[in-house]
Image 1: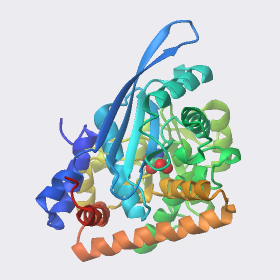
Image 2: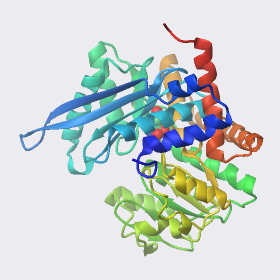
Image 3: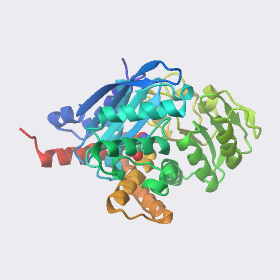
Image 4: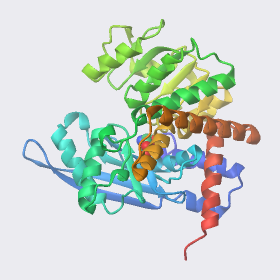
Length: 416
Ligand code: GLU
């Protein structure tokens, strides 16, 4: 399968562009392109109708050179091993770019959570955690929310793991409810990082963020918070789409009202503050900024030529295929890559893990100020690297990340 529709091949292609520019040692090249550990489990669950269903779950620990594996768990019918491997690799590079002491991991379960009750989701989560309990832990591998998982899912994971080890272990997951060791600001952190990197990129391009028009694909945790925070700094959110439908208003959408609408109906479709929009048309709109905040493989060989925006900020992981990325970069579109743009989530996950370990919790302002500093520093180091190597922002982000992980791999050496 090509890099157009296989995310792991896409990751390898992105990696090799940067590794060539770095003249990476061929041995280290091999080490950094192989996942350390891949776990596949079968999770039997008693469904509400009294029948037993068996779900397949994955956890990939791609690399733990810089610290414990870190990364979310997603529940989606399209989950597969190559996708989880790619997402785990992207977490490795993301943590290195963000400057936090974690490796990369990712988990996923093939299921359709929209068709499952809360009780079934809890049973599935607990069984999955039971199956991988030996492999996770605050010093080993620390999961977090991702597509279709949330703070409640993390509470079940924390409880199941804690029951296995016999102590209350808050640091085993991040993105938990605030009441049980979660961090203030974590829920909003990925969207906040998208806002910060969009703002920094606009400044670099000489594009005034006040009045800049924005289209957002996906209105889950990342898309909705990105839209909200971008509108608060003056950008105009003119279109939003999700899996069910879309809404478009060239005068700007009322994002607060749209969030209230989706809380009731679980979709932006039908929102009265704009005209209906076919979700397939979101990337064609005549806007300044695109924020893909849904799934991978959305801006592809098929549709990149329709893009009119000057700036793309990747809230999702892997939304742009390598072929589309190359074409867009060649015609001057500035792309803030996923491993930089959406690193705010895992950065505040790191703050949550630190707070759990200290048993001392910070004010929300302190969390947000620290996130602001880390995101601006990461953006600046990637931009400087792009200038130094005369390359695009994605390749530059990989250069920063590969350099860090390769240096530590060399320092640690090979264990017999
Ligand atoms: N799932 C998020 C991501 O893709 C957050 C991961 C984390 O906080 O560990 O970056």
